[in-house]
Length: 98
Ligand code: SF4
Ligand code: SF4
Image (tube, rainbow, N blue to C red; front, side, top):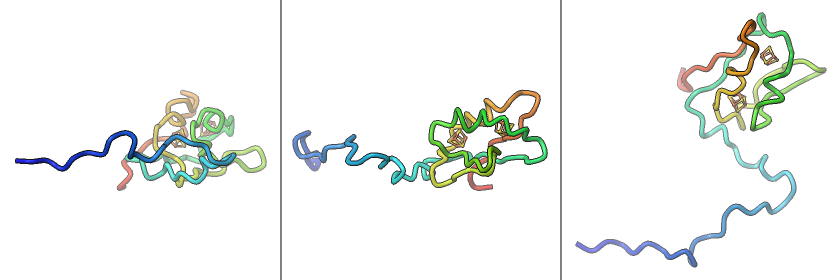
């Protein structure tokens, strides 16, 4: 049985290029998510550790306070939930389909 020939590296599109400043915003990494963060406003002390540590800049802050998740870019890594102070634990991760 014969298999279709895979393209060689010279035929592949060149990837990993930054074509303009800030173009990472165009990549909607939210599509990678299998878990998503849920915030408990009653527990949150607005320390903003989650904002500092989120690798995708997906924590929205308004007037110096936690204001939401940017779910277009949140990839569901869970760092915010892990790093929210242990005595607070205002963020939990739930399965995306819930
Ligand atoms: S780390 Fe936790 S307590 Fe701090 S702002 Fe984020 S959700 Fe609120
Ligand atoms: S789950 Fe990850 S990407 Fe999403 S808001 Fe938390 S730290 Fe950011």
